Amino acid sequence: MLLFVLRRLLQSIVVLLAVSGLVFAGVYAIGNPVDILISPQADQAEIARTVAALKLDRPLWEQYLAFLQHAATGDLGRSFVFDAPAIGLILERLPATLELAASATLIAVGLGIPLGLWAGIRSGSLAGKAILAGSILGFSLPTFWAGLMLILVFSVELGWLPAGGRGPTQSLFGVPVSFLSWDGLAHLVLPALNLALFKLALVIRLTRAGAREALTQDYVKFARAKGLSEARVIGVHVLKNILIPVVTVVGLEFGSLVAFAVVTETIFAWPGTGKLLIDSIGVLDRPVIVAYLLVAVTLFILINLLVDVLYSILDPRVRMAQAGG
Amino acid sequence: MAPGQAPAARVAADFVESRLALAGLTVLALVLLGALLAHLIAPQNPYDLAQLDVLDARLAPGAQSSDGRMRYWLGTDDQGRDVLSGILYGLRTSLGVGVSSTLAAAAIGVALGLISGYRRGRIDALVMRLVDIQLSFPAILIALVLLAALGQGIGKTIAALIAVQWAYYARTARAAALVESVKEYIEAARGLALPAWRIALAHLLPNCLPPVIVIATVQIAAAIALEATLSYLGVGVPVTEPSLGLLIKSGFDYMLAGDYWISVFPGVALVITIVSINLVGDRLRDVMNPQLRR
Image (cartoon, rainbow over all chains, first blue to last red; front, top):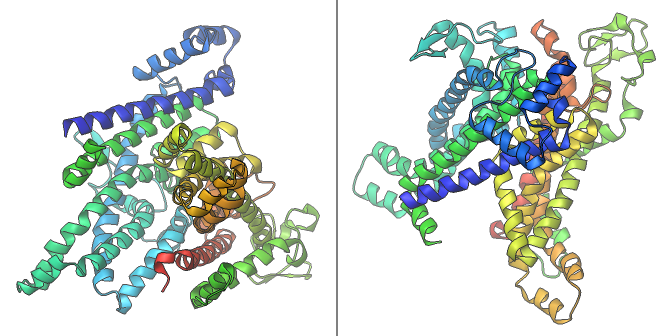
């Protein structure tokens, strides 16, 4: 087990180094780093000072080491627009993005598993077919378009929910969150639902397929033959076997939720990292773009690592295969 | 499957058995026609400023133009542009970007995949590691980063979409090439001492294509959706050649004020396009998969 985790950790570090190399190549080698990292408003003296501080006059490998050194200490440059450390700006907005992504995961799992079970067990019924058709539509609708339609229906036409913004936040263990007040919750519902739609369709499909497969297995027949209630057969025996792939996919997809939050946050004016990225691209605030990228990549690698480890705990066969191969 | 029937004919015969897929194919054909013939069938050229009348700005669907020449069936935008014409021209940009990037990504990916699967060894390990790393990041993140570095533009958007997609084809083509390259006909071609490029192109490639075609259909829809998303976010195509995504973006503010049509109709066109491609792609996957064949 420990060997497995160590090997995975090593792999993650290699990927992180590779990606940081690519980012470095993109920013420093292809573009002109002076243009990218120094504000266009800076005067000659300031440019000279920054060039020296970033070692831009040194050989490329030395620059890369300096870049890594700065990155490792959390120094990813200063935002031209906010005149604040880029990494701080990202971290400041990270709770909003994580709350959105976590809410979306909750919706996707909370609605997706029951709906998928229903569609899998009663696949011939009208409701079962409707759920399946809905999940196909969920795959086809682009996220931003679905978000616009949610705003159009629930904010513009019905006037039930706010069209954008985060609303008031409360502090929970020092982290600002929205879900503790009704107004905050009202602001959270539409963006979270929007972000959840695609994953909801995914969870429905996985659960439905898993349920249909499980129902033909011997252990289900045996459980029924034992005279167990249908609720217990489905709720315990079937569900337990469906959960493994669902947990893996939902975990792996958490990273993609954070990435897709870029779209949802822009539509709903949700003050998270994604909106910051789009705003920064709009005004060419490059240190923030670079910082976002590195933070996002690190987050991804951590999530992949965590899911792999969790998966190997849930399913020992994975661990064995890895250790053997 | 009748004996002696050509594979393409069999696929076509199986395909038309599904009415839903046939409906999807029909709608898709109409969409393609509309995009290709936009300059002939659109009521106005939406980018010819001489044809626009500011007095006609933000008219509701079905309104008559102020000079009485035409009717705006889907309304007009804030510059008096006919939304229907905008959609037809926008479809052209969206489909053009989606199809060209998919074809280019398929060509690059299949080439790398075939080399990997046929040669194996170090090249294979290198290419597949790259594929693994790339596929562990969501497409939208990679595309955003590339466009943030490159800037706006149709060519740049296509380049970003190629970079996002090639890995799918490389993986698929390699898997097929691994299976095919140990079969007898490749063995025979090697026995004839044919050059490697000829074995790969004339013998291996045609037999690796079916799964690639299936992926490509689904990927065109994904590419169109991704392009629309990027353009909506303002990092994709430029305003001079707006795609559906950019049209939707331009109507967003008016939608909040209650003028829904500027955003909604381009969006409906986008969704219809994506759904019809997906219906065709799903059916293709079913009829081309020998395991599902009855």
